[in-house]
Image 1 (cartoon, rainbow, N blue to C red):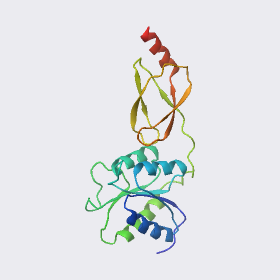
Image 2: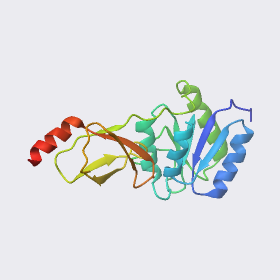
Image 3: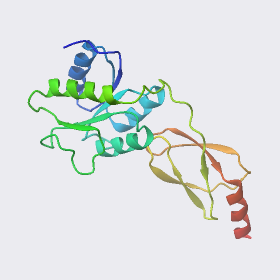
Image 4: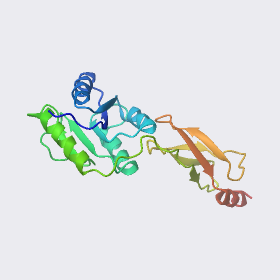
Length: 202
């Protein structure tokens, strides 16, 4: 098979043997390959450098491939993704899956089909994204006078609640760790909402 341009590839699979074989194959074709065991590790890697294409298993620990690919499509719509699984037969997208292609693991001629599908997606994808993501702007949180507020992680897009602090300083940037992926989240408690909350409490 001809050598490809040096694209960055992220493989998400908890099967160490599959990752090792895929790494060896695609590295020999000129791809720069990184492997993640689960969705949270994949998102952490993408904070360091964005891949040009992603191959993900659907049955992953901690976060399913369905959820991971949904997050990727919302946050990084320019990156083509290929889903793979041994549990869904055929090449039709399983219900609820958001991906550019689906291939059955262990299917006939699957390595050749996968290589060809990757080439097609990369040729039709937009210009390469920058290698390193710029820092995210802080999340602005409106308060409604309750003893807690809901914060959505900018990395894994999961939400969790935090107690409303007593020191509601106007527009001060704060930090918290996501309960799910441990990513650091910058957020600001909206000054206008703070004023409304104070008036509601009086």
